Image (cartoon, rainbow, N blue to C red; front, side):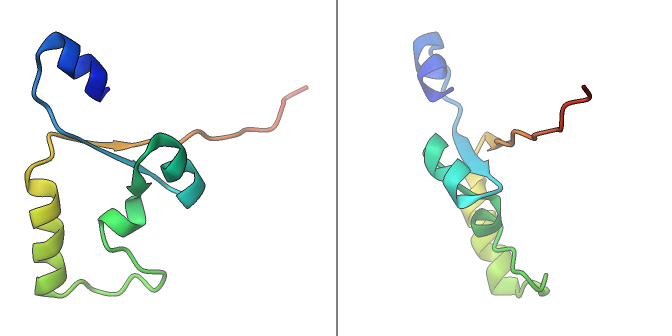
Length: 75
């Protein structure tokens, strides 16, 4: 996507995320959990935590969540 924007002369910033570490690694991104500081216990974010997320996302035009779901065959 970044290469396509460069070819088209667009200056959008993408943040690539995925639900798992392996998927995130495959796309050169991060897990959605790490980007949004999500914990296993779904703890309430502190004001400092919210500020960190806001700072991280401020320069982002598009948040991409890459997920491929597998469904069993109907055969």
